[in-house]
Image 1 (cartoon, one colour):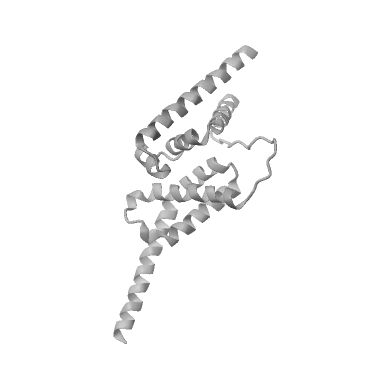
Image 2 (tube, one colour; image 1 turned 90 degrees about the vertical axis):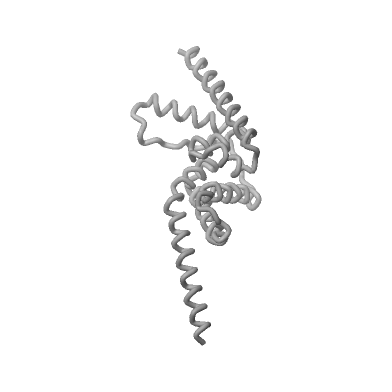
Length: 184
């Protein structure tokens, strides 16, 4: 009887520790995951669903996270896989309507706002192989090693893709700039 009581109390302690770890993960990473999810899907409701699914899967697999320093790449990997599952489950209707753009409340001038919109559109035009590493670095602040782990790529491949993404973005923005100068 005493052994059973000790086992029950140990289970309760283990569950409390798991709950505390989980709550810390949610508190620290929720906003960053949401921001990345929004960049991936451009829909606030879908982004929130992706984050919820990510944390649900994280709860189920929390015991597999042995190194707390690996939490961010681990969660980003789960989120990316959840986003991929979204396309496996549902066929979307396509339309010619352009994607909504993010609104930056901190921009002071209309020029700043327009510039940011142009940059966001150009990033969205990049192919996935270049856009994802760039977003992971710029939006999520991940290092090359973390991006390599999240995308399951060699670090050199990641660095090459980041270089090419920046160059493609720079070329596209300079073309847009030249077109604007030619129009005026």
